[in-house]
Image 1 (tube, rainbow, N blue to C red):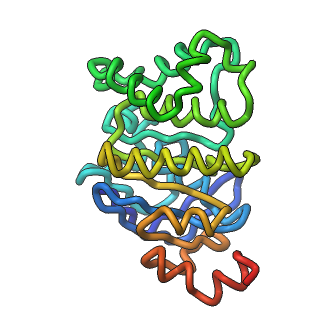
Image 2 (image 1 turned 90 degrees about the horizontal axis):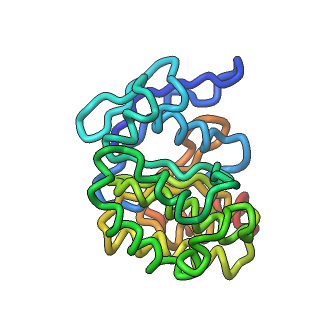
Length: 235
C-alpha cells in the first residue's frame, strides 16, 4: 500500500532522514519507534506532503506521491493526525470534526464517520457544541483522532498521540486505534516514544535512530529484543 525507497529529507538545513526504505501493507498496524529527534515526525510529514524529500520515492497505492501538495495526498485517502493535534480553538468539537471532511471524497460519508467517532469517543458527542479550547488534553487528542477519521482514510497516520496524557486516557486512545484498524480495516501508522504500548498493539515495527532504520520486524519479536529492552524499556 505504501512504499518508500531511499528517502533523504532535509529540515532546517540539516539532514533528518537518511536513505530510508520501508513498506506498509493494506490493513496493517505498524509502529514507528524511536527517541526524540530520531526523525519520526519528519517521516510522517513527508509522507503527508508537508515536506518535500531531497531524494527518494514515496508510492501510495501504486501512485507516486512525493512532491504532491498535502491536500492532494489527503484526497487519495491518507490522513495525518499531527503531534499536538493542530485543532481550531475557537471552533466547536463538531465544527472541528467537519473540517476533517474537507476532501470532496469524504463528504458523502460525513454522517457515518461522525457516528463512528462518537461511538469511539462518547465524551466528544457530549461536548460537541463546546469550543475546542475548553476541552481537556485527553479530549483534545480524541478530537484530533476523530478529525483524522472524518476524511474516511484508507491509511491513518498518528504522530505521538499519547504525548503528555494520563495513563487511562492513553489506554482509551490506543484501544480506539485497535478498533479503527480491526473494524474499519484502516491501515494504521503510529509513531510513539512509548515503545512498550506501541509494540503491544501493533503488528510490525520500525525503530528509527538518528534518521536511519536501526531495526525492523514483528512487534512481538521487537518487544523481546535485547537492544530495545535495554535502551528503551529499562529492562
